[in-house]
Length: 143
Image (cartoon, rainbow, N blue to C red):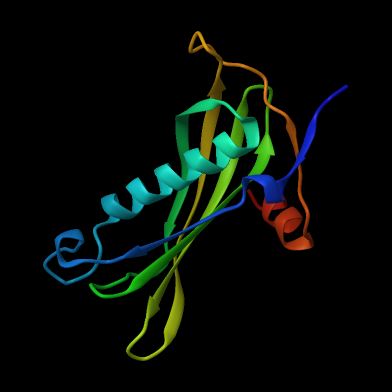
């Protein structure tokens, strides 16, 4: 019997503060810093889904929609969007919040493919994912 796991099992949320060392000469966050945050949260979501160690196989898409500046709060949300035999595609959304003007905006979206590993560091099968919302299903159709 094939194991099926809800997308809610992998859902992970992280909050980060944008600090001056994370920013460029314009005072906005480095894209590489955002990519690092995306890679980390995607791995956590994939590990929660598969209950295995994972490695990043590909950063499939990255859309830098807007920038975040020093002092903004970033909220990252990730969940497993689809699965292969040993791989998982994780969707990551990053939003920034400027507390001074109470403005929230979408900063980045990304999809990352990760592979589950067994104790010998070889690819190992993962459970299938059951998407729980119409929004998630529509997202899958567009990815």
